[in-house]
Amino acid sequence: MLKKISFIILVVLLIGMLVSSVFAASDTVTVLGVWTGAEAEAFQKMMAPFEAETGIKVEFTGTRDLPAVLTTQVEAGNPPDVSALPNPGQMIEFARAGKLVDLSTFMDMDVLQSDYSPTWLDLGTYKGKLNGVFISADLKSLVWYNPKAFAAAGYTVPTTWEEMIALSDKMVADGKTPWAIG
Image (cartoon, helix red, strand yellow):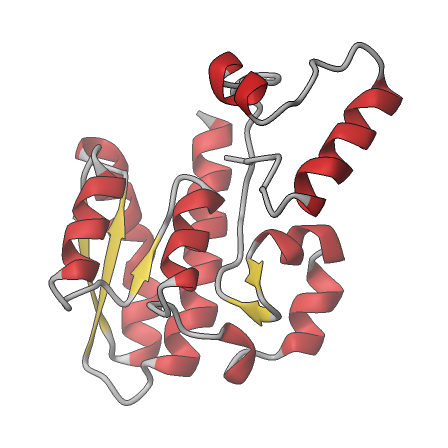
């Protein structure tokens, strides 16, 4: 439970940073996240101080199918103002398509750089633009790969850490992204 509360607090802080800077002229900010039921109610309660302080109403939509819902909204030209993405892969897809805002154009980068390690900020950066700020990470698995695609690319399964690093470097040189986090 404490982990969930900490996660929600971090999301609130992130949203506070985003919406207070970007959406100050707006009356409403739309937020899409994975929380439903009691989690969504807790999130809404945590938004009350932000709403009271800024006068901005937070309209939250929760879904357990966030990647599909968000993709549909983005493709329809009606994305939320803020979304709590479950992994960086989808953020990169949206960044490649030019669908995200460069946060460095309105957020205080000195504050972000003092609060987050460079590696953490790199997770949300694509082609030099900070498109997201990740607030948590979970180890969902160790290393997963598609054996057929792996073999077709001519890669050999590494058996040492040094071989893993060499393989990663080769994949990057081949224009591939060897790792996904989230």
